Every structure is written in C-alpha cells, then in structure tokens.
Length: 159
Image (cartoon, rainbow, N blue to C red; front, side, top):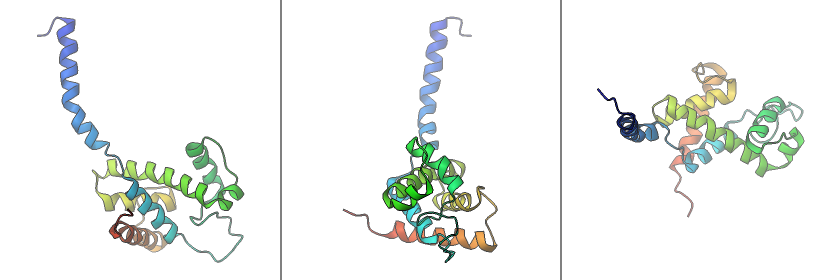
C-alpha cells in the first residue's frame, strides 16, 4: 500500500504517462488534405435548387441561421449571408473550420475509420444527425459526398 504522498503522486504520473500514447491515438488529428477533400466534396455535392432565391448561401448552400453560429465559432464574429455569399475565401474558411471539427469528432467516434467518418460528417451536414442517412435523398447525398471525397483523396498532392 502506498502511504507516502510523493509515492502516490509519482504513481499517478507514471500511470498517466502510460496512457498518453493511447489518448493521442484516440485524438488523431485530421489532416489538412482530408479536410480539403471533404470541403470540396461537400461543395460538389451541394443540392442545386435552380432557384436563386432559395435562401441558401455560397457554393455550399448554407442556411442563414446555420451560418450565424458557424461564423461566430470560426471567426469569432457573425457574418451576414451576403458577406458569406460574396466572399468565396471566407466561405471556404468557415466551411473548412466546421468540417475539421466534425471530421475530428467522427474519426474519434468511428475509431479512425475514414469512410465511416466522411459518411457521418456528410449526414450531419445535411440533417444535423450523424446517422440515419442510408436511403432516399439523404442517402443519395451521402453517397455523392463519399464518391467526391474519394476522388479528391485519390488526386496527387499539390507540390
């Protein structure tokens, strides 16, 4: 039995150090290439309503109420839909920020299964839920995102 507080502290540190590699693996960082591929896949798969006044903004077809929270999270300020729509660089930046967050969450939830993570993030993007996008419109959408993601990931990296 450990009675000495110093021994107890040292024991706790040794145990903690032993856990660090497994914690680091569980919190695997999503690569910039994965984020870029997902952002582009979401852009390519965005539903085209053919209605210029559909209430969705940018090439990613984002709702104004969604944009408020995302811009506040990523830019620390709210953007108007017009600001988002009129600046492709800012739109891509916000979408990349949110995509990184969601892919990271999904990698942790799927034990680093890349395609399952893409499916979960694509489902969340469309519905706000990570599951339930297996059929119908959302199922087709998720399949499109996965296909575009795989195409992006198979391209040689830019030098």
